[in-house]
Image 1: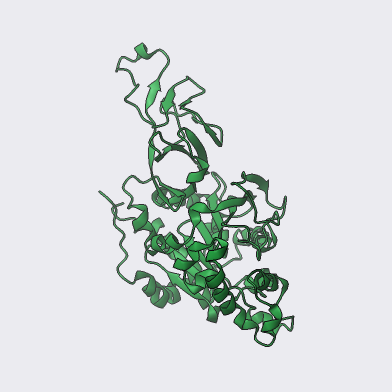
Image 2 (image 1 turned 135 degrees about the vertical axis):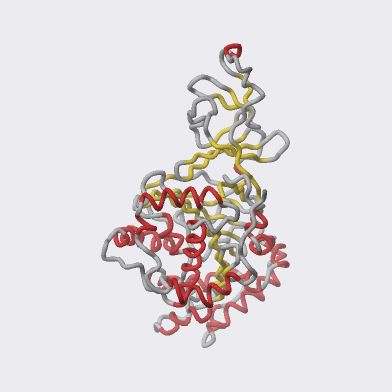
Length: 450
């Protein structure tokens, strides 16, 4: 039986209007959810094992037999391109005696052979060959045993898996997000930077961070000349399915920046204006008009520069950051010509540690002209490989350094008996909604039928 969500129409709206002020404004973000091994174990079984998780992109495995493995908590997932072009996902464990089947992170081969007793499995998950096949009095396991398979579906080149065989479809799970992403040329984007960082914090710390902009004026002050952080001028959506979207106006100086007395148009914005044939000097005395001017210029010049997808985009999508948090552990900032991908993965044993996968995707050479990556460039002819680093080992770029550098102190605070569960501002309701959904899964309210 396929699960059904218990959201009544308007559940998310009722949360903002009623549940948030009544239950989540004060004391709700208890320290156990960030530091307790017991909480983390239950969280994996009740949340990660029952939700759709992004594991990679179709371009990583273009040919039959191509594969990659994805580690999430104590599980390893083997994702394989099939002979018919489809993609399947399996638990990365041999069904003989439980040995890890594939130890490499990626590769290409026609089958998978266990390095313990040489059992060979096809890329479709079927057992093909065993040693001493005649020694099984119950009958040969070949052609009978299969690898444990996960649900696997694709949206715009992103591969999602679900450990729950009764889960709703990916489209049902994503709700309105599915349609909202159709205008972005995600399939054509190239991964220009990819880092996996071993973090000294619980995975939810960065999800919390990416669910609010209250920290922006403190942590990301250098970007206030290009992005609006005023909560009164930011649009937020919470969706019944558990996901959220924030639209942050870009390509204009923030109100906070204008009040600082600094030059209204900084170098990032000036570069963007010149790139689209506009003179920064023309906006003297009217710096907040740059966003609309850039929207008009992109609308007019974009198709001739190879940006045909602009025609289907709203004016806001041409300039602004549309930042999504997909429950439970995936956040992505959608730009007109790029995407900033954040995936947070729990550690297998320690709730005080996690893994942060951060990828920059670009369509065209200027997708990240205004927001530098750690490598300082937004150009690459093909997907770059993933680089694995320890926290503090290298910069993640000016933007993200501010986010990750606060996490060590956050985790230390969450472990203190002096922390009393937080006190949230009104604008932090997206963060509270994430924890509300987490609580519903932890309580067994979602998914239905469990």
